[in-house]
Image (cartoon, rainbow, N blue to C red; front, top):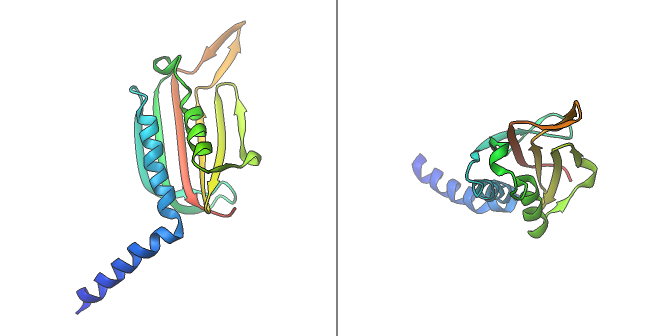
Length: 150
């Protein structure tokens, strides 16, 4: 008898979960992982679970994509962070300019859509030393998406 009760509950959850908007964020992580996988040398990892809230330091249910590769192997390509920014902007997400920052070779930004926030951080840090420009050997990028306050 208990099995019969679980089946309608699972059907109800499958119907209601898309209404929460969290599926869009998780599906977004799959798309983000796909975009980053286009860069052949990139190692891309995707996971679901708690992600850190950038507002209050708490944890929220969501998904995460992390990717990295030697910086030299993506030289001359469109920067992966820029590719993600183009994806978000072109699919109806709104950038929260209050949470954006750029530094030498690195960037951080947040896009929002339907109560889902996706934070992107990464790049290859660069600096000038002794009159010469240096760049980190690894390009690292991290994306976290979660339902959160607007």
